[in-house]
Length: 230
Ligand code: DC
Image 1 (spheres, rainbow, N blue to C red):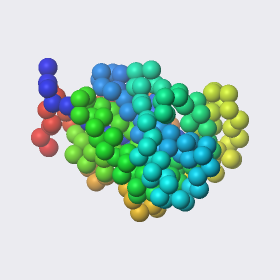
Image 2: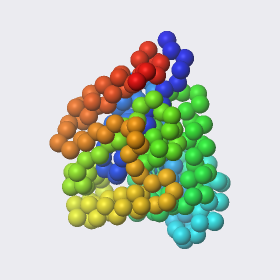
Image 3: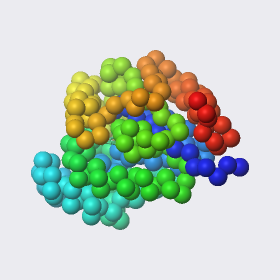
Image 4: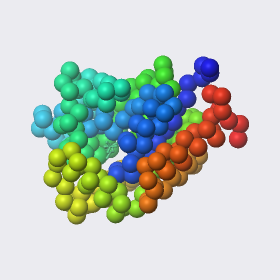
């Protein structure tokens, strides 16, 4: 048994399949799954509820500092200030607000330390936009998960329909593209592929194929719990 903690960073645009994949990979490896986007969504939800302007950097930073966010990894629930907000944050309006809120440097600062501390005790699979580039630049495994925009929109629409939400393809596609653009062009920790991240284009791949590909990359980069010398 190895004592070294392993970090698997999975980044990529919306609808690339990060959450589904990260959960499966974490389960296979026995690691803790952490959805960093859920933290930005929780802050965004609170801001929307309090009617705080999404360009009010100071108040948004205060909210992020004050927010008590608990990720119950094994049950896949998100708790904000004691309330289960898992369903509330899956809303597309919250996703759009999260993308705006996450551009605020003070908000990112407030969440960064918490994200780092979550990997202190356990090996983790953490998904987001800046995990391999900013949160854990030294992660042993970095995956950049991508897919054609049409496919990402289709997957996200199906996922929303499955959970009983209204999802018109054109609207979903527009929302995703707008969010990706904002996430890519922001100054602070933009969405990008880290130089040492492995690109996995999932267009046309089944979930099983993506999982196999990613587990193979993990095995290549981590041997016997030690960082592979490469
Ligand atoms: O992964 P997600 O769709 O739940 O993320 C929601 C928003 O949060 C996303 O549009 C950008 C932001 N985010 C971020 O800036 N950095 C992360 N590590 C994760 C999410």
